[in-house]
Length: 444
Image (cartoon, rainbow, N blue to C red; front, side):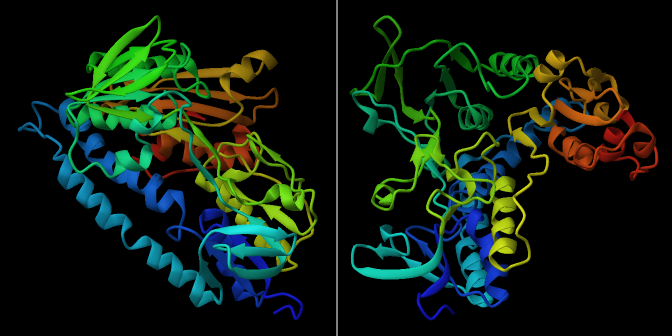
């Protein structure tokens, strides 16, 4: 341990940007402290990815059962209360498991809210000073809330994941990841869903022709979309809530989800006091994840950059800082290909160069009609297509797919994109047959 400070490295926040690298860093003999004001693990394990994918599993199963009608007999229905109870069983053990992981490695966890006093000192809950040679800001993102009358009547993603009873009518304001995934889940569970868009586009960061396939499928299932909604106010009524939007139009609903995005969780951290530069997009860092204050770093979703705000990016940054702080590297961070996916049904997954960018640069784009490929017919997928992008030398540099198995297909192709395999090298790869991985390699 540093003689001058309480810790060599102090993390503020205990999510993936911390524990994935913080635990192995402590194992190297570096003294590590972790300050967390909520549950250890942060958003993803406790109120994000793990919870979401658990309550989505029955959706995936019912969709497949519907397609297999006639082969499978019986009408599957989702018991919402049991689904939420199962979710809780999955995630309840995670904070303690992650606590044990950190503490067993030698890290110290301090519960409370941190605020900078100076560049080496934070005050926890306004009373306890903790010092460190290096400090890592890893506080992630929090739900954005609309600045309109009645905003307190709306709910956020964590509220949705904890709904013990599913409301009959749900209105979702926002059409990004959270809005579309929860619209898919709640619709399949039997709720009447309306999605209110800020503009006329859904999932703007994904290939729009594939997004349209997902949206059209949801429309056929009864989900309503209101474009350019211009939401102005929420009010309480005798029977529920009323949303004022558009040209003084109104919509009655039982429950409102504000899914208008996520913003950096930097409130009352005291960054102005120590001069750390940031804005509404996050904390500014250099190519070593170092802020303008040389002993203060940032990692994970709270960083201002153009990377997808996904768990694997936070994991990679956390591992990089572990190597940097333990002396295993002095190099700048070099990001790998970072894939992204929206867990609608079907999913849309992508990695590498986008189709839009490929069209502008004149790269080779191949289209694969997967709905008519035998492996996707096994479970009767009606919506399945992919586009693969190659450069002039034949290297696979991008892929996007819409299908129920899109995330696994894109995962299978990541090594080829990251390491720039050409077609000859790809032809040397023989996957297990029959699997989605084999099918993906076969098309590459």
